[in-house]
Picture 1: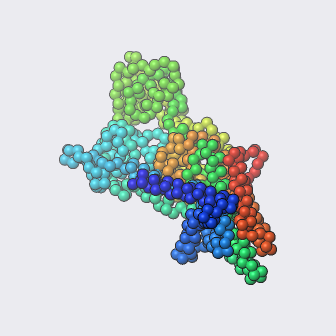
Picture 2 (picture 1 turned 45 degrees about the vertical axis):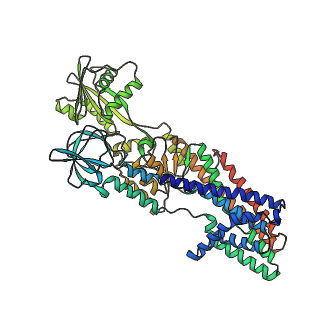
Picture 3 (picture 1 turned 30 degrees about the horizontal axis):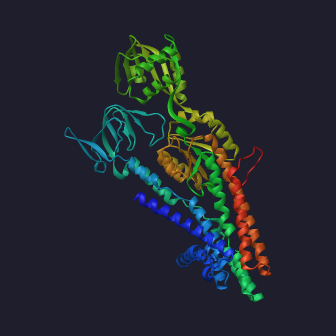
Length: 628
């Protein structure tokens, strides 16, 4: 069914392009006075391009009394045909349909994100009953059921762990960069991933009440309530129709020449007005593509030009999104390098994400091989015990040290507290039952993040940090970036509500994120920008714009480009309306006839396209100031 929808959508576009090509050839033949069988070929353009415009105008008037630009176009078409000016009628219809096609090509929406969210929900669950394990459909799980979740599986419903120790990747719900250790009594959410170790849980929220289903509903409701910007030509259509009809009728009554009235309708057709916005948008989209942006919503740049705040998710957006070793601190008995090597050896067989991070960072940063451990034991909820090169190594959390009656020296504890306040996760290490030090892991800031934030503020937009990570990590990163407005511990609903509060106060928000948990906020924001390289497909589908190469340093260019595009659009509109009014005066005085009038306003359309094309290679100069 999805493939059929894509085929029909593409088939419709190809049909429109084919009609325009045929109509263009027919108009060229008409202009050269080629008359096969005595029939003006301009009639082909009238039929292929004009009839759909007339039908749409009639349906809009009858069903909703909706006066849009196509009402005036229809009047000009019919009047031109009545007085025998078929070329003028065909040319007007062709230009209007060309503008409509350009708009259609820039406003295509993708709905795949909601479908992918649905697919995140596990199809089955392992139910325990009377000592036996039965696989049942996930939708049949009831509140109070006892379920078992194996390593690598997605948790099917919300619940509480009854037994077992594990680490859960909660990025889908909270965006936290590091997995969270879980044990008996801890809550878990549907859609999150069990990293290692099996556990038994009791279901507390199931079906439509589960976390992942609530997120799906958030995305759907926000998508339905997000209104699109109405085209400027349609916003002005009522006044255009009234002015054009009044001028035409008065000219006819005063001069008695209907041809002058028809010429007014032809030159007042908003062809250049209709082309003013989509041509500038398409040129700006071409420019954005060169800088690594995929603009998925046609009016996204138009909206971006008006934002006053840009909210950033932290993990994967301003940071790299993967834990890395920040520092190794030794108590003094052995060197830091030796401590790092022994810890990597102890974690070599570990399935814990933090253990894997230590091993991978050691391999990337150090020369030489990691010694193979002679013995290895995973201690659930605490860490690992291993033996390497004749030494017993303990690596884990504070509970592991407490269980083995090992105490860190006061000076090392004070230093550990400083790293904890910076949002780091600590792995404490003991060698031969004596405290040896600790390793701090943290998410790392992107190198271009500070400069990007500075330039965004210089462009007139205030940055905000909106993250699911805990407060210490959020404040530490915000301090490095100079961001003063910080909201931490945000679930998807919290991000949605924060953005809603700002926008209800009249402050338009641009949201930049990368995770599945950002999808509702990306939909809700006035403009959503997803990190397409490291981000999830669902975040990209929810956003208006995707940054394909994840080079956030290009974000200030996009902001300036959007504002430059609006300047170009306003210049196009001013020029097209001025040309129209000059042409009306010439039509009233009889200087222009319908054919010449059509050519004049067609020349205006060409100039609008040329002006818009200048955006293709536009780059902001340091001295240039843009105001919209």
